[in-house]
Length: 170
Image (cartoon, rainbow, N blue to C red):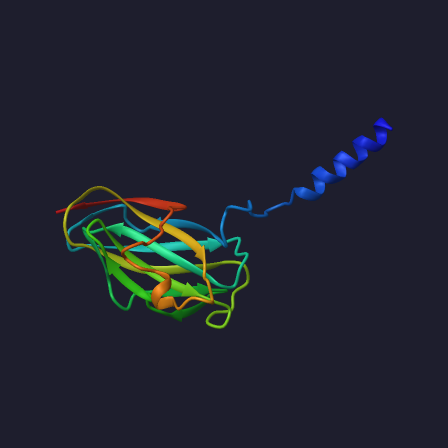
């Protein structure tokens, strides 16, 4: 009887563990943020690369939050998927009294990918940032809700899951 219990317990443990899988609360993908320069002067640019892996859904939202002392450089956004480049722009480029936000809605109809992709864009230093962060949140895209109303600056529902330090000398 004890042997049967050990075998059943082992089967349960091994069937519930998976190599490379996501924790149920991890979200639809896992991002990593890289900056070409973590310390810039006002007027200088840093290139932002967000590696997005372990994609478990074809519909998700990439939200990027960064300090007001930085601004998005228009027409610099692109996705790289399997060494192919796709020009894009953020669906939202908004600011509140504390942060700037870039928001990208992705779905399988827009971009075909194989488990991972890169989002690239540039940020320009416009004023001093003593100790800031470029942060990323990834959420499921609710296809029942219009993208225009799914993200609002009044309630960005931002939970940082990856970040990189940035400093701008004014």
